[in-house]
Length: 462
Ligand code: ZN
Ligand code: ZN
Image (cartoon, rainbow, N blue to C red):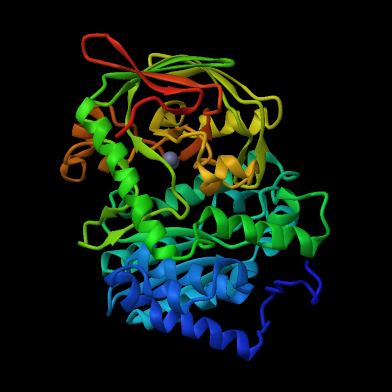
C-alpha cells in the first residue's frame, strides 16, 4: 500500500485539497461545450498537461471515460465494476456520469484480498460455483438499457500461488454464469467501455524495484499518457485517433484479404480470415444506437479469423497475465485452426487448463493488428494487463469471436456464424505476437501476397 504522503494517495476515504478541486471543476465546466464545438476551448481554460495535478488527471480520465468511451446518454443507467483499490476513479466516474445525465450509477466493488480466502478455506465444491443471480442481474440491467463500464486494475499475480486446477474451475464457473451478459457485450447491444485505474498491487508487479508510492505514481503516469489524458485536449486527441483507426479498418475491408501470413522470430503462421469478415477499430455504434469506444486505450484494428484455417507456429512476444497467473514463453502449433501443441516456459499448466476449457478454446476468435509505434509499445512497459498489453502489439485471441466482426453478424444465428468460420467458446483470451521484428502479408483470394506490416509497422498508407 502507498504511504499517506504519496503524491497520489488513492486509498478509500482520501479527500483532496479543495483548491485543486476548483481547478478540476473549471476544466470540466468548460469541457462539454468547447470540445463538442471546435475542440479548442478546453486548452484555453484547462491547465497545460504538465501543470495538471493528479486530481485534474483523474477527473479528465473520468470525463473521457464517460463522454468519449461510453458515450453515456441522459437518462441511461450505468453499471460499473471496480476493485476496492480503484475507488477514487470510480467515484469520479460516478460524478461524471451523473453530470452527463445518468439516471442511476450502480458500482459493484470486488475485494481481491477477500477472494483469496476462498482458496484457503472453501470446500472443493465451491470452485464449481458462481453467483449466477449476480451475472443474471447484470444481463437484466443491460437488457433494460444500462451501459457498462469496467475499471481494470487487477493484481496480475493475485492467484499465482493458488492451485491452477481450482483457478481453472472457478474461472470456468464464472464464464458460464457470465455468458448471457457477455453475449450482449460481445454483440455490442449496449454501449460499454473499459478504463484502467492504477492500484498498489498492480503497480508493484509492473515496477517491482520501486517504493510503493513511486510505483503507483509511475503506473498512473503510464495510464494517463497511453490513454491520451496528458494531451492538451484529450477529447480532441481521442476523436482524431478514432478517425485514424476507422481509416485503417476501412482499408482492410476494401482489400478483403483471404488470409494473413506472419513471419518473425519463432513465428511462421498462416491465418485464414472468416468468410464475410469485417475489420473494426476505434468506436462503434452499439445496438442501442449509442456511439462508444469500448477500450481505453485502444490501438488495434481487429477482425474474425476462420476457426478452421490457422496453420503453423506462433510465438508470443509478451507474457500473458491470465486471471491472476502469469504465462510466459508461449509457443503453439496450429493445424487446421486447432492448437495441436502448446508450450510455455512458465505457467504451462494454466495454459493447458485454459485451452481445455472447451473445443473453441483451442481455436482463434480474434486477429488484431497494432503498429509497433503505438504509445503503449513505445512506453517499453509490460503492463501485465491485457487492456494495455494487447494494444502494444499485434495479437490473436483464443476463444469466442465477436459477431460484429462478420458482416451483419449480430443478425446471424450461432449456426450461421459458425458456418462462416466464427468461433465459439466460453473464453476470449488475447495474446501478443507482434514486435518490431514481425512481418505480415495480406494474402488475396488468388493467393498473391501484399506487404501489410514490415518490422512491426504499417507497410501501406491510408
Ligand atoms: Zn484485441
Ligand atoms: Zn480480444
